[in-house]
Image 1 (cartoon, helix red, strand yellow):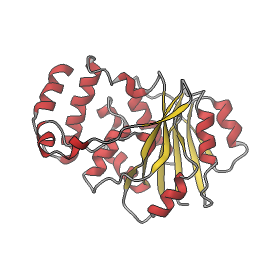
Image 2 (spheres, one colour; image 1 turned 60 degrees about the vertical axis):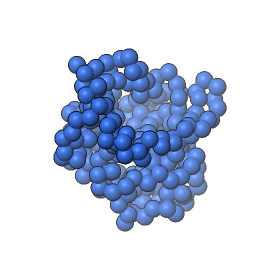
Image 3 (tube, helix red, strand yellow; image 1 turned 90 degrees about the vertical axis):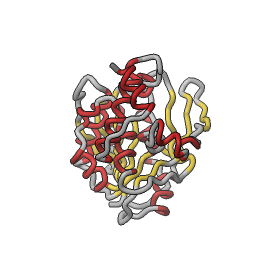
Image 4 (spheres, one colour; image 1 turned 45 degrees about the horizontal axis):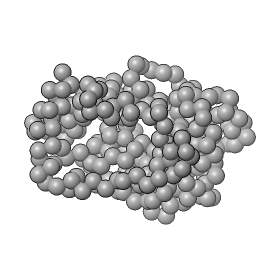
Length: 260
């Protein structure tokens, strides 16, 4: 089997139905499976699993007091049941365009070693409208910025990520989610893979990211909160851990100061 879609969901009652339908309505005619980490609305999920052999449900419970750790452990647990060579990650409130798997099949093979982040389209839950997310971060290619602030790769979001199963297996063999309790898997995995080879950023309007009042990143987006700086400080430490190289720059000093 070429593809396994892993859906990580928790209390996303209003969006999980749409999410599952987007996976089952793919134009791709080859074999693929949808594996759901079931911590959400069991009634909705089981309605689909009874009718469709593509769907597997893996019972998962909350593991910790940190949402990012729960997300990581849930995906790690679910990955054990995946039989596809290529893994597509998907949050339960996001959804795929029907062309996603066909696009991936035409651009990547199971023999590639790759991590791709397609360019997410936003979806406003309040007005039910799609909108373009600005992914252009030209400063990422600026040498001075990289030296003084950070050299992290661009991170678009968990649901944009497609990679090999062997990459994820190796990643989880060395990364303990509890050690990086403020970091989501998209940042952890992107920094990990970027140390192996460049990340691909191809594919437009393949994935839709839901924007609503309960987004996980909202907890860490306020620059006036300690959580924001704790996450940033932890990301500097993680980058050094992956690259096996210590450094100090303006960004790391500021982050450490405000996180203490």
